[in-house]
Image 1 (cartoon, helix red, strand yellow):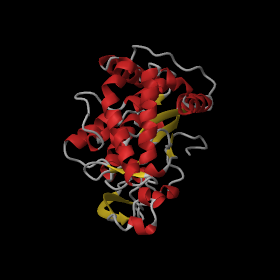
Image 2 (cartoon, helix red, strand yellow):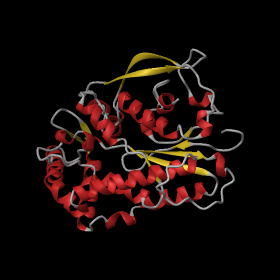
Image 3 (cartoon, one colour):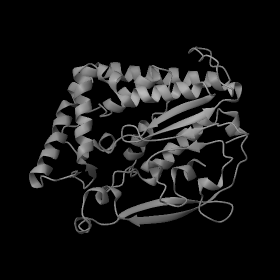
Image 4 (cartoon, helix red, strand yellow):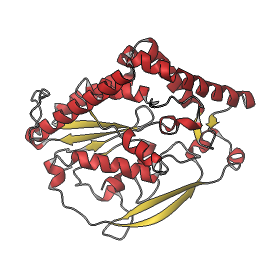
Amino acid sequence: MVGGKLRMLVAGGLLVAAFPVLIGCGERANGGEPRPVATEDPGLSEAEARVRCIKADRERLQAELRANGGWRGWYEKLDPFCKDMLELVKAARKEDKEAKVVSGKGGQLAPLEGLLRQCADLRSLGQTDGAAAKDWSSVTTTVDLSNQLWGKGIDLIVVPIPAKFELLPEEFSDSVPESTATTLVRHRYMLALLEQDVEVIDIFPALAAAKAQGEAVYLATDSHWTDQAMRIAAGLIAERIERYEAVRDHARVDYKTEEVVYRYRSPLLKGFLTPEEQEAFPLVEDPALRIIDITGEPYDAANHPYSPVLLFGDSYMMTKRPGSTFAAHLA
């Protein structure tokens, strides 16, 4: 909170996980003004910068959609990939009819129901030429939340996190189409929001580039991202919200960092397997940077109640790693 006014909020939980950032613009802190209309004038105000970002991202995603042949054409390219994932699920259930986890070719684990849900969404988008997204509660709820917050002078920025199969499709299929991203579902979700003036940040290109350079972006035996991937996302969000005066004027702190390795039982396995079955898998090896506060203790967002950024989210916030949470890296 800043001067009693909410400035910014980051939250998660849509699709695989998502982080919305809520920002209260100083220009309209009391709310009530109509949303600005997208314009070619770049402008310098916070509201105009927001509109420019929405317009640019919407046009980029629309261009990618056209390049993939529309929703139906994109799905047709991904159909062999989707069928491979379903075969992987079928094989897992043949081996164990109670199977809850699927193992990729390189040992990457993913929740079985998650792959089934994504395949179902891919199919419905292809069959309806993208229209199925109109009925997604994740879209209608987010748009409604954004409109309510806008009336209170708060901006919402949604940052969907790519699923493991989007960043590591080769783990789950031998039919990954060349030069065609497997991101159709998340792409449709983002475009549906942008078309209704909800701002998004697409972190997939940056994470895909990191993966191409040999960086690990997902933990092998868990369904969560790596510390490196989280730091990349935090950097992109920090760059975007620099447009806000409340962020620029907030006192900077020279945090120190230290390298650590967290070792723990995979939350994915703990959620689906018995303790005895979990023993068949090694502990998660999770190398990370730990942010050290000026007190000498690991950074804890609870000790910074006057920060201009307020975060809310799900397990992708990585709150059980002291000093290596999403909030710590964004700080």
